[in-house]
Image 1 (cartoon, helix red, strand yellow):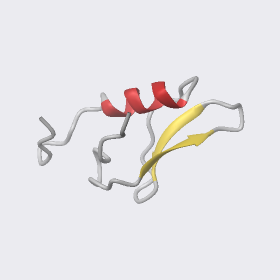
Image 2: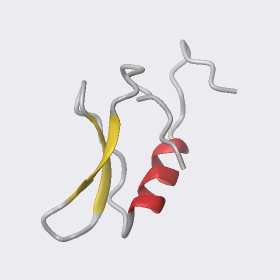
Image 3: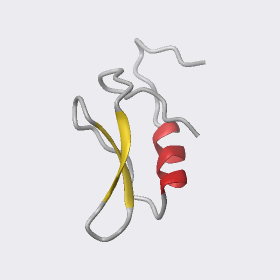
Image 4: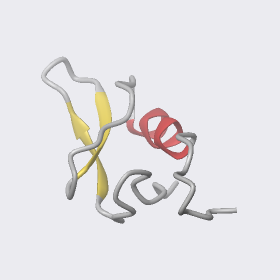
Length: 60
């Protein structure tokens, strides 16, 4: 599963990062925005992709 662009800066550099507790969070390498902390990478990407787009973005 591929992560959507960052809903804040439109960068395609959003990647999963493992927390100190072994959880996974998606984080934009450009602006630092992050998604919810999840149990694994698949859920982190799914959660990131469910974030609403800004009015300037059209991902449909």
